[in-house]
Length: 277
Image (cartoon, rainbow, N blue to C red; front, top):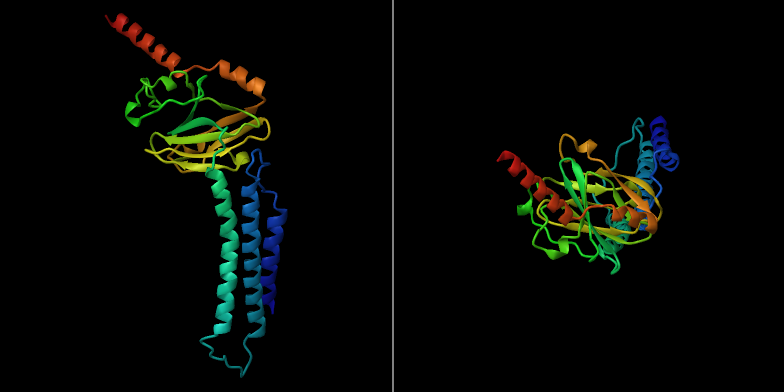
């Protein structure tokens, strides 16, 4: 009897802890409330199954506990029970998977008016690239990476000359505008994650992954790496600052383009060469 009560108390306490837990999600700041809804649905389904299994165990402990002279009945098959368990399990799994597939389709279906923003991860810092006045990002190639060109941008691509390059600094975005995030890693696996946006994806060396979101409120949000990427993984931090359009464009005007940064490197090289001679 005591064991059965303990099992029931464990189930009840687990549900109450989940509902009243102080460790909850950060307030959402993007359009991806569908992700929250899907996670909640998964919690409720798995929680119901958890409670049902614990309750069944408590019932069995109470109903079939040892009594002097009682012998266990051998019942190797119960086709009716097996059918019911198979059907209920299939319905439960489908109920958890179907919303996720719908949300995933939305997650990778980028609106036509989304602005491309490239995020580049490397041990252990974040760099960003935004399109210039032409509205297009230039191409890049890992073979072009060098101390003077740490992002491997193609200097012969005219679309890349006016690209805004932000290294080891904060990323600014306008509120209410959809953004397509292009994810690229220079060395190992990274994962660009802003908890308030609910959206994240692995960054794989040699390929470009992507997702999109729309910032829905202004503020400053921490960027985390959600993939163990080395000894300084925990210190791989940055910030996304979501601003009103006027403030965002004022920040954008102060940033340097790839052409300006390339010219700066060329001047530094020439000065060094002249000084050496």
